[in-house]
Picture (tube, rainbow, N blue to C red):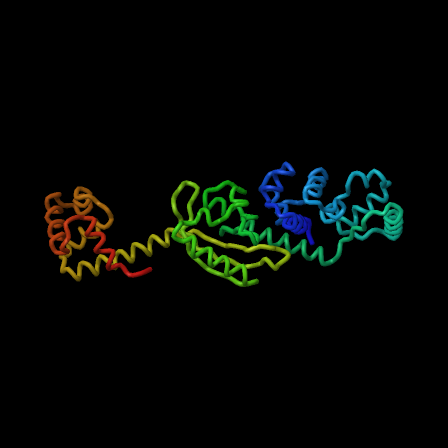
Amino acid sequence: MTFGQRLRELRKHKGITQRELADRVGIGFTYVSKLETGASPPPREKTILALADVLDGDPDELFGLAKKLPSHLLERMNPELTRAVRSILDGEKPSTDEGAALREQIADRGASAITSTRSDEVLRQSEERFRALVENSVDGIIVMNDDLEVIYENPSSACMLGYEPGELGGRDPLRIVHAEDVSRLALEFTQLMHNPGGTARSAVRVRHRNGTWRIIEAVGVNLLHDPVVNGIVIDFRDITDRGCEEEERLRGVAILATAKRYALTKSEKEVLQLIVEGRSNLQIAERLVTSPSTVKFHVSNILGKLGVTNRIEVVALVLQHQPAA
């Protein structure tokens, strides 16, 4: 078990959120998230003691997992013994004499034995590889805990959505999802949480920091059971441009179908397309290099053939012929 995993376990047992823990200890909220995920190394002694106090945890256990020596223990050790302990904390094997001295000191002082096993080292290396992978990914990557709170986001995700690094930490990701997509995405999250190792793919509209809506394609993987990750990993990319191209293609199909059904001429079809794009008569005239009076004539013919009275009804009728995406 890592320091971050034990910290999260104690917090869950205490029944408090990351934000509440941060407030009580007097540290940043995003710092707590990064401690739990291992994105930040264990904190200094003062913070470890404060965390242990708030969470009713064993300080010696936290110091051991943090691979740190508390000052009160250092004061009791001679330099040789201190070096021996530090060598164990750093994963090195002490000499025979140092090992014997350490065992004797532990027996005399009643201190907790701190060891570094091969499995711990493998886990640490796996965590480092995972962190390097996500940190350098061009895709946006966030990790959520089982409360669906964002506990990590890589630099690309912050840049893609316009937020500052760490700003998404602790947020419910559904809060920036379009209202029409929330129910579907919430159901997909719930199903994914109950499927260890499972994956899910979805495309949703997400609000950018500047207020615009972006189309995001995301793939989620449930790695809550994986001690290296201990979360749900969401890999996503912005496909807004691709979505706009598809929408434009579907709109073109609808315009073609409308023109064919109502026997519009080639010129009337061109004017119809620009009406659907929201162009005024003057803009249409400039685009088609013709006179406003000619455009007005074509618009009048279109309204008559379609049996409508205004441009809004023209657009509504065209959209009825648009196939589903």
